[in-house]
Image (cartoon, rainbow, N blue to C red; front, side, top):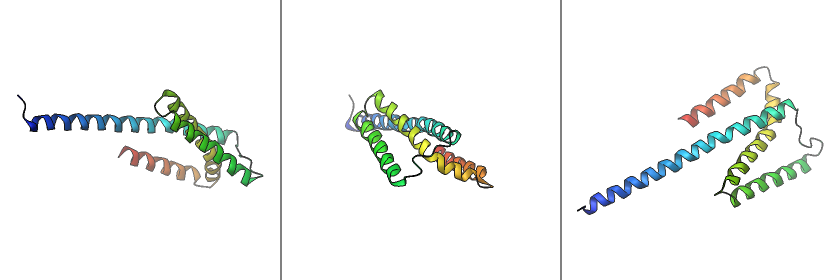
Length: 128
């Protein structure tokens, strides 16, 4: 017969295993979401993507509409595969939006090294 301490210990161990599983899955999804972000940035740089550069206000409003649309869709489908697909689409879109900034930094004399230091630092912090 088990005493109260053994039952509490088993429940605590089950809770810790469940928390570790959730944390592991969260970090795996975060790592996976970096792939479409990088692809989106590469596509934007190669296509010299300029999102309505002539009209910054309209571009900003359109950006907010698309970003909020993705966020709404992700929230509504968070417990299904469609939610994951929407998340990956959202990160691709954000990479596409970052492409102008990355292109500008790449135009600097030490731009590639700045980007690599930022990428390496982010990866080291994430890994740590």
